[in-house]
Every structure is written in C-alpha cells, then in structure tokens.
Image 1 (cartoon, one colour):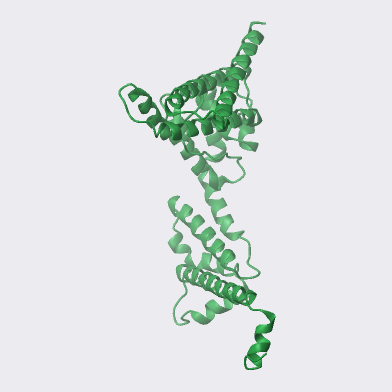
Image 2 (tube, rainbow, N blue to C red):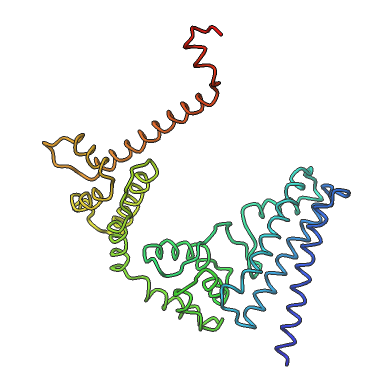
Length: 329
C-alpha cells in the first residue's frame, strides 16, 4: 500500500513537471506577449530547475517500479526533447541580454548549459548521442561499449544503479534480453557488465564478423559513383578495424583483392585489367584507388549530361527550324 502511494505521488509530481514545460512552450509561442530578456532569464532558471526535478523523479520512479523495457522510455525521451528545445529557445533570448552583476550567476548557468544536456539524477552529461546496440552485429560492439564507458561508466557523479538504468536504455533486442531480468540495484550493474562482456567481448567473433562483412559485401551489377564508393568505404572500414585488432592485413593483400575484385561490375573489372601494369603484381590499394577514380569519372559524366539536359529544356521547338532555314521565317 505504501509503495503504491509513493508511485501515485511520483506520477503526480512528474505530471506537474510536464505541465510546467507545456506552460512555458505556450508562453514562447504566444504572439501577443513575447518574452523580454529579463523574463526569459527567470524562465530559463525555472525551466532548468524543473527539468532537474523531473529527471530526479523519473529515475526514482524507474527504480521503484523496475521499469526495464526500452519502450518505457519513449514518452520520457519525447519530454526530454521538448524541454531541451524550450531551454534552447530561452537561451537564444537570454544570450542577447547585457551582462550585469545581478545576472552573473544566471549567465554562468547558461554558459555551463551550452555544452551539456541534463539527464537523470541531475547529472549533466555531454550532448553525445549513444547509439543503441541490439547484439546482432559483433563489429559494432566495441564502438558502442567504448562510447558508453566514456560517457556513462566513467562518470563519478552517477551511482551504479543509475549506470544500469542507462545501460538498459541503450540496449535492445537480444543484448537487452541478456540483462533485462536483473533488478535495478547497485549489485546488478556489475553482473550486467559481466554478462554483456562474456557474450560480445569475443575477439575471434569480432574479427570473424569484419572478415565476413568484406566477403558478404553486395556485388555491383551496374557501376555507379555511389555503388563504387560504397564498396571502397566498406572495404577500408573493415580492414581498418581488423588492423586495430592486431591482424596482419598487409599480408592479406592478394586475398582481399581477389574477393573485392569479384564485387565490381564486369565493365569496371575489365577497365581495371586494361589499365593496370601487367608486368607488376597487383595490390589492393592500387585497385581501390582505381575504383575511386572511376567513381569520380561517373560523377563528372553525369554532371555533364545534366547540363546538356538543362540546356535542351530552354530550346524552343521552332529554334531548330529557324536555324535550318538560315534564320529566315
């Protein structure tokens, strides 16, 4: 009974915070009563304080009700976006205000808020979008976990239970299913990290997935600038990742060249063999440079065709008749 009363109280307070943001939105959108600079400074302070309170309340509610599913955060994320837009609009107004001794503390608050975005627990985190990770592609795990560690795990202001809250928020699919059953407690964060690491921090699988991504790259049926550049980007990206993982990619040159050569269209393949020096052993970098040059030539050719088409559009039907008749009507 006591728990249900606490939940009702928290929900009521959260609703009030959302209502406050709506009120400020209406005030900003009202054409008849625009905010002056002094009023905007006050509203900015109120909105930031309200957002901090909202974040504290939602985190408390999440822990109390053990909201684990990423779907539970959709409404919360929408409110965050609304509030951030309101704060941004208020900042634009206040940035025009003259600096005085009475407003020095407010100016400091605004300056600090410029580079950060408020999140749960009143902690301000860098405005960097952490992509969600679903566990399907092992090659994306390292990038995800390193970004998560840099922003969330390394924060001394966040408690373990808050870090677990964020971890569940940024995971989905089979990756989230690994830790979804863990309660939002301090001890669960360490367990969650162990489970995630055990499943995805597998160097062999990561290397294997990068190699497979090169092998499985989509064959090009018809050569175009976009298709050719995508092939080069995909090859370079995965080879770069493999090199970072300590793999001797310099020794795989002819193997990778053989694989990638089969991915280009037949006309590009033929043009490459005609252009290369047959007295020398081919190498991957020369081939990728050739593909990039070919993509550029496709772009230049397309631009030329577009110019011709635009020119033809402005020719009147009678022009050719007049020119053929020596310009006489």
